[in-house]
Length: 168
Image (cartoon, rainbow, N blue to C red; front, side, top):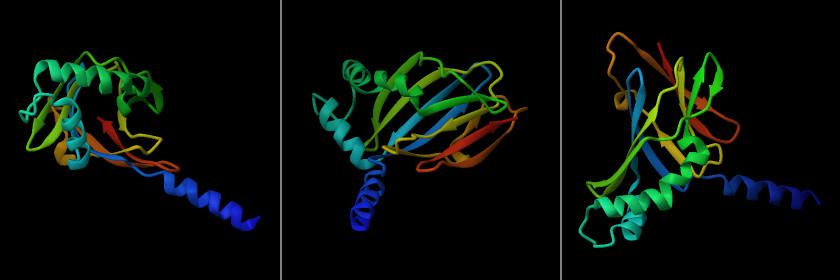
């Protein structure tokens, strides 16, 4: 019995690992946040094989549109793994109002914009299900309003890891 429980627990641990690694580059202004996701090499190659239909090393407007419909549009359900907070209380993430995908130096990049809810004091980036690991560094963040500042903190969930971007 004890061996069965240990085996089941080890299987849960083994299944909780990221399948994709994404560098997050947010550009924040008073009304919106524009985000660039740069996918790791393996995920990028899979996306390129699936969506660069003419195999020219770039994504046309039509190919980017197909990629949007088949991958990005469904992320609305998961709030684009970008969560807004006001004084510790979660605010609903608005729907993205723009999307573009490109291939840059053999990596797929998603560019999208989210309207920034009024009163946002934190923006958090994470995937609770741990299918995607996000990397956010201070050097990746752009604030258009130079009178404002931010602090970047790590978010250590029970079984996932993410980032908290505190806006000041």
